[in-house]
Image 1: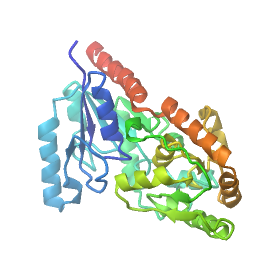
Image 2: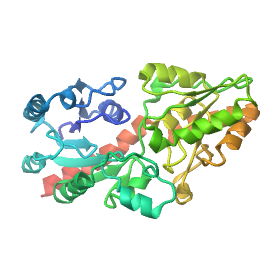
Image 3: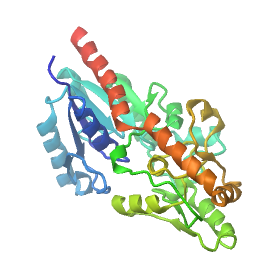
Length: 343
């Protein structure tokens, strides 16, 4: 059988398109990553186009050009963030089925997260204090398209399963070659919080905890880092003694994975009902009310910080290493191809 051909497109979200495509190539898959969103230059897709940043005419001309270049070339189209090669309305979806290809939708957050449901059901969620930029009609359209034209659905965080119940949780992947472990040692010097969205991450509560601890730890720098180039952020994380991820969402994000890969202690709010999904996860559970004291305990015990960091690296190696997740994806893809052959 010929090598499987897979396209990851058209958005880079936490580097998943490029990381997964690179890992798949190591297993003999002809994988290619394509990103239309130029706002995350830290990620390295095989093909980066600035179409999303153009005016309407240039944008849609670019999308159609992308479709012309890539339609019919792949066995599986792995689409991220509910967008196909002609977003946002995805009129090209029926084409892939007509061409005999498998289609996978991979959701990452506000592409499908049902804000009304999250607010009505959970005291704390990604939506709790968010200034909403999601589009409920668009979300409903994505899910309706998936039911009709998509062969499999994945979500990167388990809270999204409430909005996309036909999906499967698929953890974010990290290329661990990019992260040399640097466990904390000696007296603490640096705490980092690195939000992509302050309201989703609960940054004001993190900074309030920082303020309450500055007098107790005058030698520690408490930093909120935003919109930094990826190499600079990774270098900063490598110097940290502890990293605070978020206090609302109920699950951990890519920054937490990167910090654990660097052997750093991570503090994060984890929803109690998600605990059965975690197997030996060393994240320090916290809430917005207890963050200051939880962080103080981590800062006060250098031995515990080192042990947490070591455990975090081991956890990421088990749960988030790109090769293992690429193998999981490969099994999904093969099942899609076999289903197409049988049909």
